[in-house]
Length: 429
Image (cartoon, rainbow, N blue to C red; front, side):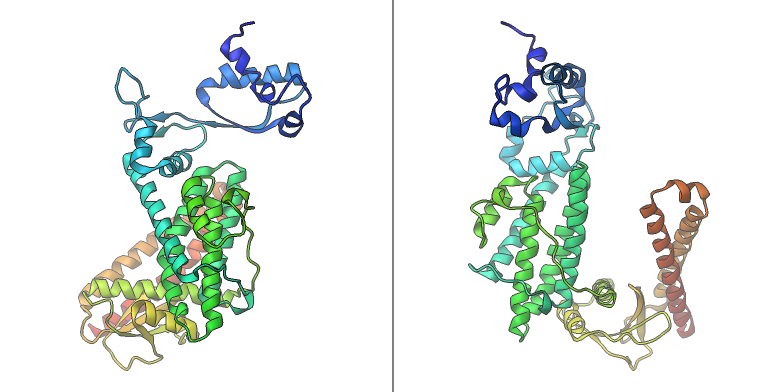
């Protein structure tokens, strides 16, 4: 009547489902999809479940086994009573919440490797959740109590950009979830939500939300809702409580987030020209902001800028992109600056010149551009060395080789532009 604890727990994959009776649960859930376990009990438990299930059920107990490491203290030591270095998860939950702890544990560890408990990373998880909460409040303020309808034929360039990024992230997250690469999923979602959605799209949306075209306004609201809903669904396995709370506060179709399906990609037309222009616009905003900070200007100070491609041709932006630049950084695009006192910056696929009116220190600018050229030459040498190595080209993943080739082309293009900028500075000196 008494079984060894590991012997009895070895029956778990099927005995919990009603075995030896032929139950509906047994028919539906056996064999199990995945077992999640630490590496320290592979022999004690996992192996015994395998042979007990083989013997009793003539089948395997589960399709996959995900083996994780152990949680250690910040110094990498095993938590023990003798060292007094144990951490009570309930204390962590009291301070930061269950979702922050869950997100930290699931996205900061690689399968099979131990995880060090890090208070700073716990704090980072809490801050991330707070960022999501604030973003959700902004979306709620814009859409009200009615779920907006998305019209893919009336999308602005900004809307297309964020939806395109969302589709890319959804592909990567879906693929890595299937492979149990939760750390990669966490990094992808963190970057997309914090940078693309919160830092960029929410700010960029303010330019279109005040458009005179009501169709554009309504569509921006719909895009805000669509992206936020997709974010909540992708985050739900990691943050079940906060995502459920936000979902219930939004206009929704289901009684609970747990009844929703996995998000789907949005089908719309997005040309390479539109992609390039949006990348250039964002790069220009960053460059203008950095320049204002560098030269102690007020963020609200108006600047005139001009954009030219590698051949020196003026880059004509769309009305939307010009409005975004004006709204986001008070930069006005003109073809001719009518001034010799300009500052040049290499941005995404273009050189941006800014009318500075005696604010440029030519010697400092010369030194800065010289350092940038040295950096680019080093990167070109590194990338060229990798691509000329037969072992790297033949053994590295195809995606990695392609990425290095794209980097090399980008470095070479930027080098030529930066050298041209330096020559202009040298002429003035």
